[in-house]
Image 1 (cartoon, one colour):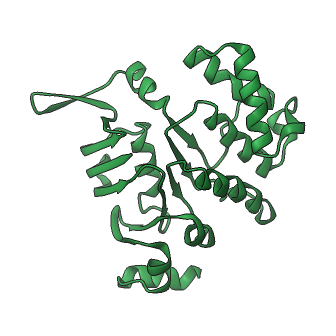
Image 2 (cartoon, rainbow, N blue to C red):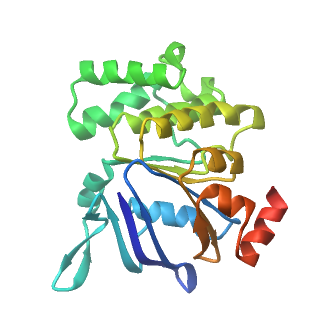
Length: 250
């Protein structure tokens, strides 16, 4: 579902990604962990071309993301073409990014109606179903400011799912939440994983990674230091840098 080939990203002279290569199979959950500044979130943003890459290639479901290739050269897609690709990739951000002036229901129906041309009746029916799935059936008319952080993040997940994505990206979805609200968001994510949704999750929740992920990737300094089955990486890390990181947080 996702293939990264030697992906590099610079911000001026700062090298943030230094040749990231990885694969995520359909229905697989990959968790990416590592210290702040290691390039985790930047990589996630490159997957749906919220950031352009300086070298390498990214594919989602076999389609080159953000670029077209002609005669061995890459040409960046127009914003409209990139947005069209993005329709199939759901993303949930650390700080929710909800439309503050729209109700929970209207947050969910906006994109399917405007982007996919879904009828308002069908969009509302789907939104009501999704609100039920994330435990917010009674919050359809509430505005984001009237919801707790955990409720806002569950609404953000429902909004992303309304586009019927083939891939979900989660950028530290629980790090802005009070500790007692983390569990309700992770429960929704566990359900998605159980239903076979392909997911890449940047997270600090090691218990979630151990329980739900099929692959765990540890990044540092813009590189993949170690990857493998979560239980093996967390219990018996082979690289000294992984050992040092995990010893501080486990």
